Length: 506
Ligand code: HEM
Ligand SMILES: *[C@@H]1O[C@H](CO)[C@@H](O)[C@H](O)[C@H]1NC(C)=O
Ligand SMILES: *[C@@H]1O[C@H](CO)[C@@H](O)[C@H](O)[C@H]1NC(C)=O
Image (tube, rainbow, N blue to C red; front, top):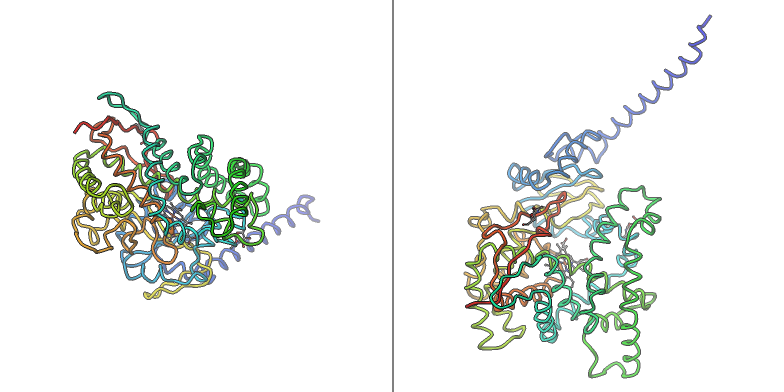
């Protein structure tokens, strides 16, 4: 006779046995899958590479991504290595040869769109239309870039006015200015002078909205991505600030857009005084359902999303370098003065400012926006010339910080030399801020290299040229550059540090 408890025990232990065997089978299936076999051949940095155990590495990645990538770069330079993230494997490509293969890989194999679609949870933040119809990118690359000369006077005027409003030293006094906040306002006003024009580009609430929008979307995406797919639409609409921000954007932009449509209808296609700005171009180019006030406003916000945070963090990095190394002020000032005295302010004179250009380029080399760049998602297996196969589902990146501090590409790479790229006189475009390369990736490189970089360079150069002509600067803690902030693989300048400004004395 069975013990009464056996009636219970037998089926239970059987159930445990079956579950356990199934788990082992699943695990074996997983580690012997095509994906895992490909991944096994790629060396791992930061921890074990088996499923589940890889979370150890993922944890280390969140804590200190920069050091992990540097470790992998030093050990496997010229090859690839992988790092676990909480949600996925990330493969890092190093060396010019593999970088060249990486950046020229077709979109349907290593996809830029799918990677940003995932990381920004675009379907639930900006909305799927932004990816399905990317007509704003053509406008940035085309009309916006072609009209930089035309738009120069307005942009310069806005830079001067915005600096004047944000930084007001009296007499010979030094004033302490929270650098990132102030530079975000200047960048936002100057950029929106070209996107939407006066008076909206100066309206405080609109400026704050545009500056905050990047954070709203990035933080929103971060929250959304912590939830399973079926909950994401709900999370996107109730747990993030994005829908509210879009609504406010429509309130600010709606009347301007409606007014423009009216004027364009009244005055016809070839209206001589037609403002050449983002609003006009979006109205001219939009097709089908994109032709609505809400969708036009959303495009303007999307362009701001790509433009403001990137340019203001990059400029603040440069400002910290300048304030911590004030010996660079004089050579920059001499160059600007010399050119402006001869030719006045224009895009053409700006393009002659090699030292200003070099200073910003060196700053972006030294501190990019993170230790990685150029995220791509593998949709199909991709084979590198060294035989490495990237399986679908995996993310692939360039190693930004490690590459920019590699002495094979840059002499004394850990020294900040603001004039590094200006020495090379002549026409070699390779040394210009807007040029991308396998060893210079702050704007990416290849087909998806930032289409807004000509615009960004134009704005940042105008800002730096105006700054050195108008102010003396130094760090609060003299000669000491505040350390960067890091969150996983992303970095930014210290957000609270102040720079001291006074009216130029010499
Ligand atoms: C210093 C400022 C900027 C930096 C550092 C920067 C950086 C980047 C990077 C790294 C990428 C991705 C490249 C890749 O993965 O290959 C990118 C893409 C992009 N950027 Fe910028 N950017 C800046 C300014 C701007 C501005 C001012 C605009 C708009 C006027 C803009 C619009 C875009 C757009 C639309 C894309 C997506 C391109 C695509 O889908 O193919 N960016 N940017
Ligand atoms: C983007 O992500 C959404 C949801 O996560 C998905 O449905 C869609 O297929 C993805 N790709 C594109 C190009 O939108
Ligand atoms: C940023 O700078 C401020 C002032 O210099 C300093 O007190 C603070 O600790 C810095 N923050 C970080 C994260 O380095």
